[in-house]
Length: 247
Image 1 (cartoon, rainbow, N blue to C red):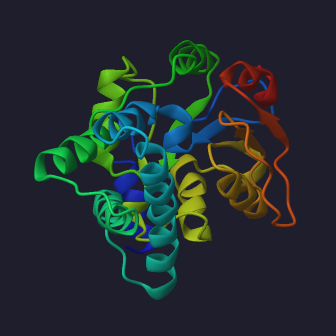
Image 2 (cartoon, one colour; image 1 turned 30 degrees about the horizontal axis):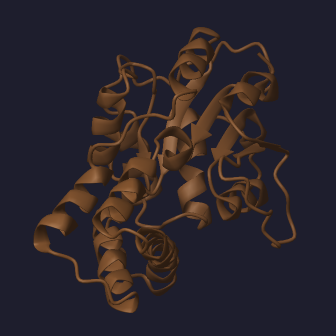
């Protein structure tokens, strides 16, 4: 998808074709969020442990690692498929690597978890408060649009987001610059006017390198990545977000 086509797609359905003037009082006018910063994957991984007691943790670790390896590798070699396909392929690898037999029904339930996510408990009130302050809000994520639509509906977040920015629009996963560029094209703002909320340390490094003011929601309290760049702030939950964006 070229830049012109993408610009048209993100504005589809708006009441006007003009880009709005965001009314937030601070220098940051909009916020883009990684999908996992918004929506909680823990029920999916708990289900893996339920299916395979004592082995679910190792299965999840291999599954998650390969899931993101595949997004990066497919972007590098230009063989993009959507995130659900990547996730299914990664699950196949993980079950074989961990020598765990997976039934068709178990596979279906684990994959269905990604199509039925809900927000982390601290997300909804903070997002609604930020919306009232006049900030533009959008997921900017590897998730597919249908994944986002269901998670938003499950979480009572209808009407909160101005755009749903899936990497499907540009066929390049984060941290490719084409993915972060979606925020600039959608909001019509400069990089320094759009805060980025990351879930993974690698994504925080990618967004900061791109030029976004970046806060890393390090919910799992993991070490910082050694990539030569650090986010502007590291927090454990969304309570730190309003102060970070100046409202």
